[in-house]
Image 1 (cartoon, rainbow, N blue to C red):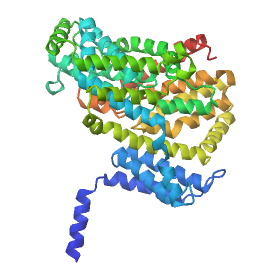
Image 2 (cartoon, helix red, strand yellow):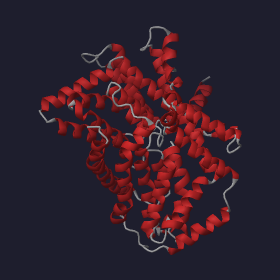
Image 3 (cartoon, rainbow, N blue to C red):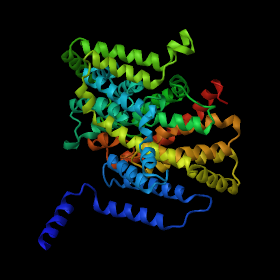
Length: 501
């Protein structure tokens, strides 16, 4: 009997899929918070829901287990605790409620669509064309990588797939052609610079389009909620609001990194030769690429609501319906197949953990936790006696730099953004609500610049070894400040011209 127990314990210690110390820390956080008295102004159900949410965020930050497993843990606890409903059936329904949210399915389906860009070779061809066009100098290659990011961003809502899966292999091939290899200690020849540009283009383009990164539809929803429906950005509205400051940031970024981390090789005529040779090997446009291009253009037109502009509001199409149409067209034309859809693990993973986080954010709002936190923060800022412009700046900066504590933009946005928006709405005069909220929306992508774990793209590029941690963090901080400054100056002027304030 004792032997069986010993063997079972040994097996569990070897087989458990979580990290032991972080798991103990997370459990301690859960039990400690539950043992604390309920804060004044908050119901017991609200406090328990907040405890579950915070524990989940801690587990994600500490990487106890994969984020999907942590999401499942949260749904199990919400169901068993019955904090959202007195009945088990009601609690389970609440735990699963967000899986019918069209915004979540927009992201999931669009990630599947992005498989076609990679599988057809269209993404690689686009990147090589930009290198052939701009690649005679190292900084030109940087602008080529940034231009490729901009081209792919509207229809690649997985910023990880775009920056890490499509553009990063092109960047590594170029670096290798100049014998810039971390294994040889020659990464500074050109690879470090290109890797930094490869990465820092990703947050900027993520800010520019509603469909450029997974959390943007959640941000869109929070803006609408906080403004009482006054600021409900369409796909076109988002793109127009962010395009000028985003484009300016994208133009400045390769030059700024060139100064912050100068490459040893400045002239790169061989890059043009390399790109043209690769294009030659790819041959002419394939049928798959033609279909993918046609679907790409169709999605842009429909997401931009062109039919409604030409034919009237009756032809307005929901963005998720457009994504469904795009996926269906790729499937029936054979550009991708059903096994590609089933095998796109990142899409199904996103559905699971994104759905759980959105569910908890919704329940926190329904149970009054967001309003309680917002009123407390508002009172603290008001008691400090600061003027509203400084208060707005503090909110944006605290929200942005608190991303040092997060390894997921979605987790960060789910945890904090709505509360910060509501505080800002109460502190900022009504005529300036829109620019404040647009700055918050921009910062939700800009904060990805900060660390090597900030978003899914960062560990891919950091893991290639071209950039050390010290340089990654220092350049990341500098670029974050530069981009916030661009949006706070050029962005405010642009939003003034658009009539937002």
